[in-house]
Image (cartoon, rainbow, N blue to C red; front, side, top):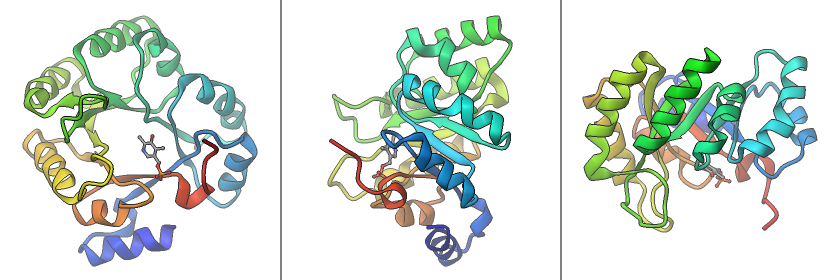
Length: 212
Ligand SMILES: *Cc1c(COP(=O)(O)O)cnc(C)c1O
């Protein structure tokens, strides 16, 4: 996997170390994560706060360099736990969630790195701020969270050519001066790296198929 990432980066005129692999371990047992850590992988992604809370605290004590990204839709009532657990929350996608994060961060004294998730396909069922509201929301979050608001994330529509979605997101990040771009999964991470991804979220291609 790292070899494919490195090759894609170099082909795009970038350096392999500029792309971070987020190994998406959702639904896979803690033993699969331990095995990845033994192989030198320290950055992981989980969708659900509860699952992450069960898996990651014990791993952290054994491996302090571990970094956990929350990449699933986040309910406001899970925000406190999310802030305690995560190094990065990739799915800041609505004003009420920003309010909840700001309130919990103030009381916990802890604020992870935040990415705004944009619904680049404007799909009604999908999380993410709609494209038309993205600029205003990003600017508000920037003003509110300062440098903790570090980038953007998207999940292009299933079956669509992802390249225009990645290009749109990269352009938005550049306009707002944001350095992190989380885009690309097992099926399209090489396309995402060509478009400037700094983080690719890869599950199936590392851990195999998930149970339905
Ligand atoms: C599950 C998931 C991934 C990983 O998808 P794969 O196709 O298994 O690589 C990436 N990003 C998000 C937001 C996910 O929910």
